[in-house]
Length: 174
Length: 278
Image 1 (tube, chains in turn blue, yellow):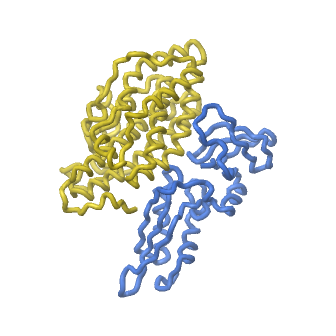
Image 2: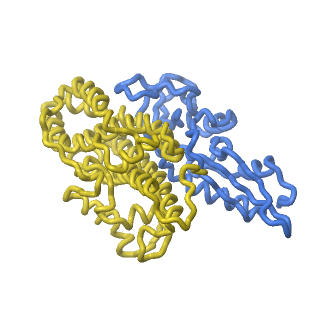
Image 3: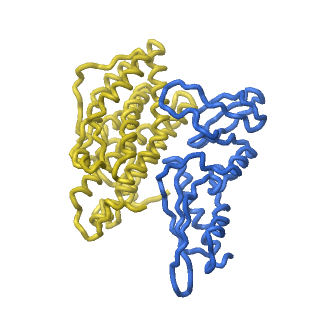
């Protein structure tokens, strides 16, 4: 239990690091880069207690994981004694995979999901473009091909490695 | 988030510019909800698994946009009058009351999105027409003076780029495919073209918001849309129809016959079992 009377951003961040993406459970919401701001304010004078405002931004517009993430943030904070928690959704600036931490990308790779490329290579509306070169997370070959632009979730595409023949998910550059 | 332009105290009666902003927001929301609802009927029925997943994920993107717009619309309603949209329940407006408890005449989506799915070709063509329009619209709307509409548009634009690409590829594939697929695309064009023009007619609520630079003057973008459509049609060996009678009315709440069936299916649970949840 954290002493809620003396609280700083770092302590809150530590708690938020335990909240994971329900669809990619190796990633915390900090790794994902969706926590945009934490505000700590005095909620009640007596007994002294603080309130928290957590600003998060959705990954994809229709991502169904966001509702679950909101609830999990609330539960994690309540567990540590924070009862006054507001979670606010911020749309602008729009989330990009560039905000994903390096640790997060490494965790993805270890989990068998190819992490997003640094710069979006296919970002225009022109038809029949060359697909991105994606590295196989298992054998590191770039000799891969896209099977489906959408995989098990909107944020992932389904790929196949032509060298080791394994299918894998690619966390799309967004 | 704060919306400085809409800071209206809760006691004030609904004001003209807020109600136009509300109508515009609902129009944007309804377009995306109804198309998402139509397309999601393909779930489990797509021609191949990868494309089934693609169209349903695209529908999910659209539904996400709808949620953002409805949440904002609900905020505008609750701020301005304190009057719930459904007066009998005395609940504040929410994204759900707006989607599930309004009637046909309250929906302001354009007629194009409510057209029946038909075959895969017609579904693709409808999405191509709509995404091409939506791309042009959001490109401008992301600079709207209304911060929330701008933020929703900027966020959604990244996804719409892909909808345009995906549907363009399929229009080309089918138009320039077999004799059968080409014939089906020609039929789909005949069926959908009458609903294209409405996309580019400003409704009263759009005109009212032009001066404040909140709404996009979509009437000035028809040529840009035609250019892109023509380029894709050329590659697909398809023709742009000439002199077709144009239907309109959806943006004012006057819908085609099929619209009631969409609501009947979509709203049934909330009508039959009010406030039921998952």
